[in-house]
Each structure stands twice: as structure tokens, then as C-alpha cells.
Image (cartoon, rainbow, N blue to C red; front, top):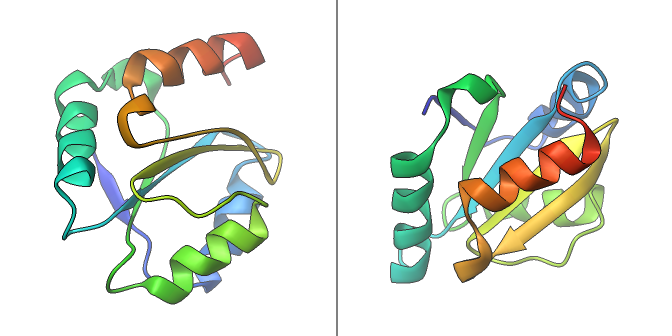
Length: 115
């Protein structure tokens, strides 16, 4: 899994732009939370490389401003851990805590038509 560090609010506009051509994933992670560590580990272990999607990683502790801007920009309630699927500049799927899984993400991609 190739994480792209998301640590500046300016990157959010780039993510929105990219999402008009390719789906984008954002994973919000708390480095002080054991549930978040488990969710991240499960994502890494179960990741399907055939998805070929950009996957952004934001540390909600050190980049709180970015985390807050994600919630505002994509109109989602802040959670940590949290995974968001971005398409056409909008969040079309999000999950948090124990609901984060590659299989659920793939199901959402299939439902919305992977691109």
C-alpha cells in the first residue's frame, strides 16, 4: 500500500481535482489510538493492489487543521479512524472505526462503478 502523506490543507483541492478522473481514498489516522492502529494494519494487510487508487494518509494529531478541513470540504462528521472515498469532488462513501475494511471499500467501489 503506497500511502501519500496529506499534511497541508492545500492538498485537498488537488484531491478534489484528481477525483474527477480517478477515485481517491483518504484515511484519517490517530497515532495515539489503538483502534486506529488496528484499522490501519487491517487496511495494509488486506489491501488489493489491483485497485490502483491514490491513498492519502492524514495523521489527525499532527495535522489537525487538515483533518478539520477534510470534514468541512467533504461534508462528513469527523471520526478517527476514518476512511473516505472521493469521486467528482465529493465523498461518496465513508466508514469509521471497526467498519473500515477493504472488502467494504471494494463493495462501495463496485456499487458506484470503479474508475
